[in-house]
Image (cartoon, each protein chain N blue to C red):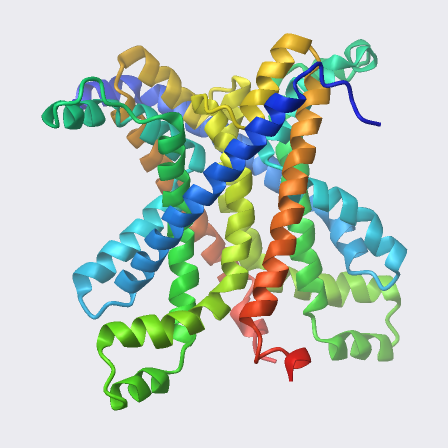
Length: 229
Length: 231
């Protein structure tokens, strides 16, 4: 492939990459906030509280993201009620559909990561906090969650990389993110191999940068210092 | 509460069968690739180590959907040239073949890491015991190492298979008539997108449950002699 062609289409690719980053960034952060109550409920001692989020998590982990995207983007239009409501301004926009679906999808996975992290905080630390006179919510906010955040961080960074790759599915609901842009450019130029390879290289660069970023974050949070038990 | 399927029930079942075939074919290819990748990554030769590492890093860093597109659309010229050199007119990859290769490639990259972990978890003494008994290198691998790796690798491979089964939906993008594509066709005919995509979701849930049950029994069988209940 000639360099001129690459330079000619590079702005389009960068635009696509920017949209990809937006989708991933919004969904993993919103997903984390949404997953917090789910994960805490999943680690609860009460069977009923544990069971409630399980249905949600089971559905979102057991079905493909593509199905979920189509359910939200194409499926919801089937109902007159939704098309009449104020929500329709958002739900007819592929961008918001992708953000909402990806957030709900990743929240299910992050909730399970959180549950695992909360459960692997040594019981003695919780008991120590309680013995010092901390209340249950104080123990949760000052002991349990900061510890769980460090335990769960490596798994969370994996989830972010997985969401980066999952964001490619947004191209199926007409969004021109990196994969969508590559398809558009490839259809214009008839250079499928080259254009998809360019997109692949950009994905690799983004994934590499994210991994480095999380490595820095782990160092900043002193994750390895917390591993010794 | 069985929804009205507008006569698409049989088509959806046929699509489910294609999905299952695709998942199993990709699993077979992916297991072979993963085993080769793990052997390459633990090889004493630096070139093979580099090859295995590059394979698993690059394939894992690029979206599955992009691999499906790249292999289906990107290899058209290459496959045609190959066909012409073999004297076959207009040779092309079918969506099923392209999907199998793409998903097998992705499964293999993750399986490389799972198998490598399992390979490293087997005590060195077992290999040495085989050598002391006068077994050849190949027999040690097939008879001693591989059966033991299986038990350690199984939970990881099970998780990967669940992911693989959901990724088969991506192959609908290149027109293979599996569950997803069939429901899309049903949607265009019936104008009921929610119903049919929900049915598709339920089919995937059922497949996941079946796979989970299968994994439970496989793990129990592989763990016999190790689990507490067996003693």
